[in-house]
Image (cartoon, rainbow, N blue to C red; front, side):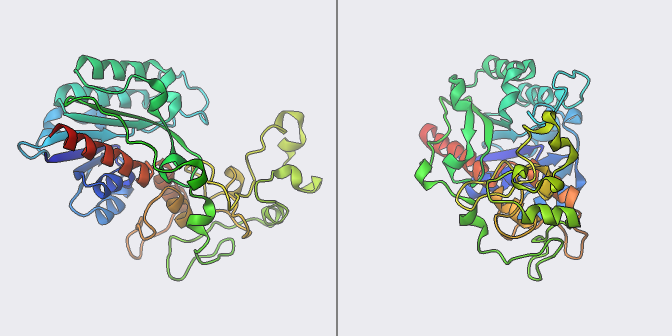
Length: 350
């Protein structure tokens, strides 16, 4: 049974790359960030990037992508900052991002795909917009697991070297469908050492000669002293008092111990955010080198292939823009798990 997929909110192509690796044919990705076009199309041959907002999409825009007789697969990860635990003001109904999942649901109703996969942050489950999305799937006669505990995926269970939990809902009109079983037990989790240790060493602010994405941000003299005083897995409380930020000297700031820290070789990394390249933005210090994660290291922890390209040859490497593409991506290995689930399902119901 042949299947073809369209990736909404495709970004730089993490989910698409994973689906392709699993054998799912992906023909198109839609996103409003035009910077994503090069990495999306260059690393995923045969796909086409479309710069168009989902709010402007209609079923007629998408239906032509599907070859006649193919199972229609629609996947996507609506931007999750609105729902993330790191975001303040989650109940702001005026935030336009609230509408993105609504439009995803609208397209499910209009397009009538055979299989739908929606990936997002676990916090989304608490909000009406998610409950309405699930009610659409029910009304459209989709099958999906109704055990809410099985909707949340712990990424190390699938070989992703990152402490990351994601909400993954897979639904099908063809019959019952569940995410494939975990591939790794806790004793088999992939750690930071497994994926990063062989990369060439860097100084803060340095660029690797053989891989321009393997570059790290500059550290101020004070932050250089801070990271040299940091232990893997430790906190800023390990530093001499004079190095501590003023906010951490106050009682209200003493609980914020997850910033200005080094990762540990023998554990998965913390969740990679869009600001992983900044030492002060989380536990993003290299386990032994005196710098924050490089752009390449962040991409690898998001399970992108080691040669995945984000910038055209001769292009400018902008930390904020590339960090956003990498941090917002669906981990490629998680995309592959979703793809394997779809392929297994098609084989069962073919």
